[in-house]
Amino acid sequence: MGRTRDAGCVAAGVVIGAGACYCVYRLTWGRDESEKNWDDEDSSDGAETEVETEKRAQANPGAVATVRVEADSVAKDKVDLEIKSGTELKVEAHLRVQNGGGLEAKAKALFSTLKEQASAKMGRGGRVGINSGTRTLAPSLPCPGGRGGGCHPTRARGGSKASGKPKGKPKSKSTKPPVAAWPARRVKFNFPYKIDDILGATDLQKVLNILERSNDPFIQEVSLVTLGNNAAYTFNQNAIRELGGVPIIAKMIKTKDPIIREKAYNALNNLSVIAENQGKIKTYISQVCDDTVICRLDSAVQMAGLRLLTNMTVTNHYQHLLSYSFPDFFALLFLGNHFTKIQIMKLIINFTENPAMTKELLGSKVPSELISLFNKERDREILLNILTIFENINDNIKSEGFASSRKEFSRSSLFFLFKESGVCVKKIKALANHNDLVVKVKVLKVLTKL
Image (cartoon, rainbow, N blue to C red; front, side):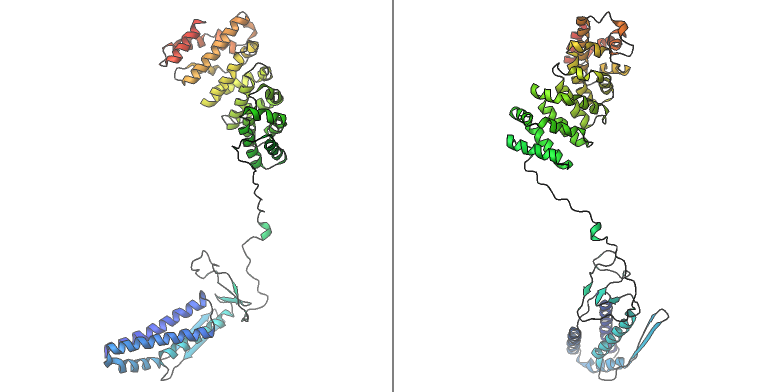
């Protein structure tokens, strides 16, 4: 008899608990369904309950009558539902089910009562609200599958009306910015060529037109890279000059964007290989020199500018245009990193190979720390370049007769550092025992000329 009673209580508890959970779901996350679907679900639940009861009856025929009697006795109990919300809302429902109703009728009645109480509560600003036929989730409710509430979009229902909502209640402000606040999407420009395409004169003219008319930094960069790659070929070097491309490219060195200036220097560097183009570029060489000296140390712009200046000073035609910047070049030689030092040395070597520039070089103010470049711990390439500079200057002093003009140069000049101080000669003699054979041969060659 005890087992039969337990079985009846379990069956009744399962049905009531499942119904209560489903009702809570309907009131919070679930979507309302029509009354027809409600009845269908209830009937299916009842059918499943009857099937389960029949199975238990087959398993234990002797306990069928007892289970039914116990279920009827449970159905006669009172179910009191009390919902309190603040001081204004207090609803009490008393559900009494007479004999013959069964668990199915009791669950259905309980669901109806809970639905009525929830509707009354929603009319007074409960957690779940209905606004003009639109269902919304309250921010405080948990949101399955979403982040921070509002995961389910509002859905309008035809034919439903607002229930109990007071007029004039302010709507919740949306945190989403208006559509006008979003930045306008820029239309992507499709550049007609690849940067490594070898173009003819007609296509080069199109690229030059794009570069001249566009203010977009990205388009300018792509155009300059395309022109620079094509300027690596001799037939295009002449074509770009004849199309008037040198002034268009040189105009880009006035921009503040360092990337644009770097690409412009690279394109002009490739164009400066032939003498005809150098005649066009010489107009901008002073501007390039100034920008190279004052820009960020060891930057890509500085390296591109130094390469262009090195190409422009391979011949003696335009070296005099840069003589005012000799002190700046020697300062960069001391302050720059390894790559900057190498590029500056190549530039200075071009000047030292021109005897006409010797006086300007010897009179240039140089940092005394420049003597540290003769240290044996230095890289092989740096040692070879600084020895070449010293060798060329020493030869020019002898050939131009500056040895007797000591009073013309100050103690901070290159002449005093290389010739009068004697420190430089001592450093060179110390390199005679260098481990590198090439450096040792170079040192011996310089010492024989002293």
